[in-house]
Length: 216
Image (cartoon, rainbow, N blue to C red; front, top):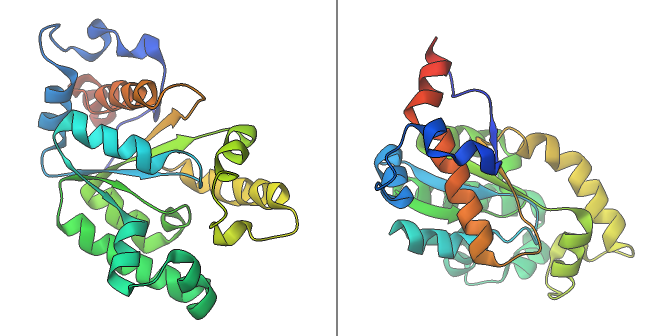
């Protein structure tokens, strides 16, 4: 099935009512809920991108339940993510993460925040494409590093040079995150502003005119 093209990144000019064909008295939240139907919204991106904080507020705006995949994994295993990495290794963790995300997607619609490596797995991307709209929260290196330094529990950053590690992760993961349906810049502004950016980008991507172009 063809997807709406072109891929939508946040651009305020694209959210003009004339561009989306929406009525001015039709709330953006209502439009998105109607267009989503039974689909979920899945937030992807690197650690520090703000997926959990933005996702929780996005769920509130849309009246959808919010789930954090990492929190669900920890609850299921009764272990922290750090302990899971240390005891079982990354590959085993990723397999468990894939199963948890598959279960959560069956419980939608919801707003789901995923761990930084989840979208890298082919099977998970396919499941998300089948039952959700994916949103990449993209943040610049300096923003990510300021945020992740507030927490010392990031397993992949337990290295001699965390910034170099983050650069390597960006080089490997950004091309894959770029396959997400929507990209929104996670900036050093209020979380509510980023949530609004996500809503506006989703509104454009889900709008009937965009789907009509892809069908031609």
